[in-house]
Image (cartoon, rainbow, N blue to C red; front, side, top):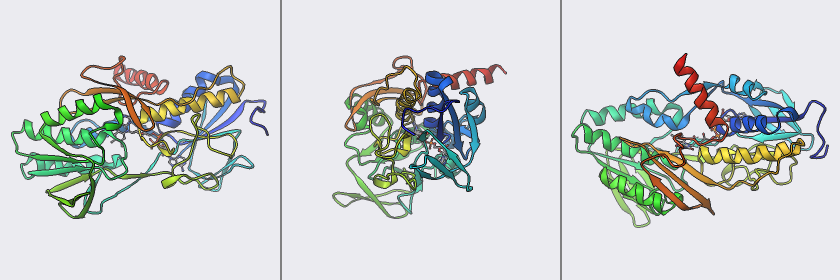
Length: 383
Ligand SMILES: Cc1cc2nc3c(=O)[nH]c(=O)nc-3n(C[C@H](O)[C@H](O)[C@H](O)COP(=O)(O)OP(=O)(O)OC[C@H]3O[C@@H](n4cnc5c(N)ncnc54)[C@H](O)[C@@H]3O)c2cc1C
């Protein structure tokens, strides 16, 4: 079948994944081509967890919000199938599922996220699936006055950019509030804190860290040879602390049957399409775009949805993915807001502010999913 042929009951679109990128894709498709597509979402999870808010859980704030997947998919006119994508046969356009099932597609979207792997054996690794369980004891020790020196470390390949700074600022703030002496250090391979978001953001975050008396060691490639010891390369500088909290390294999903890029990430073009395998697209942390951020994943998902809507015959001119970061940095007190355009993995035209930029107050900026979740939150609040 050519890219343009559409079955009588609509273009069969399979979206694999149940996170931000998958949900943004189905909501965007519903908006752009509702009557022209038949969407199936394949995901192992029954709930969508708002991952960015998990950083507050170890500090005894409420759990991050979660939402049932089924109503979101139903709202977008799709069908939810519980299961996992196993491998793909792009020639016959079939997704093989983990339980020996199969789904035929006319267009496939891979929104499978990244795999989290600890980089350091002797550090506590940030994993949002169990952040409270992993860090709660550490925060209790901090509050009990048992900690004097703590380090937050990013390995050479950055995972998500914000949580390292959020955790460091919240830990330092908690110690300050309790009049405890805590030396907090961030060790990062970045030239400056959050340098990928441009110089205004780096200036702002540096000032915040300085206010909170958080030391920062930049351009640092850290090793953790044993508990409490950090070796910083280049230069062989050593840091001795009581606890080390590290970001993980992220790897792509390495889907059998499809092209695989560096570290297992999925190679895509600016429209989110994979090379040479027909109408197969990807969005979000699973792709080879270097910055892993829900807002950027949503923008990729919107570009993918436009391409598929056009494929289904909708009057849409697909626009390429033009990354614009919008973010909200949690701190011990008020959050800060940041934005930047990204080119070649670097930010320019960046802004850092104490008040929302362009009225955006969410952690994850998503054109269709954002308003949907706001409505769901309002409905919950009034129920
Ligand atoms: C602590 C923390 C703080 C963050 N802060 C921010 C922030 O402030 N702002 C921001 O924009 N981003 C932030 N991020 C990043 C953001 O959460 C991710 O970029 C985003 O969740 C990626 O979305 P995704 O849909 O690509 O992947 P995921 O959210 O990882 O979802 C992947 C989905 O695919 C499913 N899946 C996996 N394997 C299969 C399979 N084989 N078959 C079918 N389905 C499968 C999973 O079950 C899951 O539903 C943060 C992340 C963390 C961890």
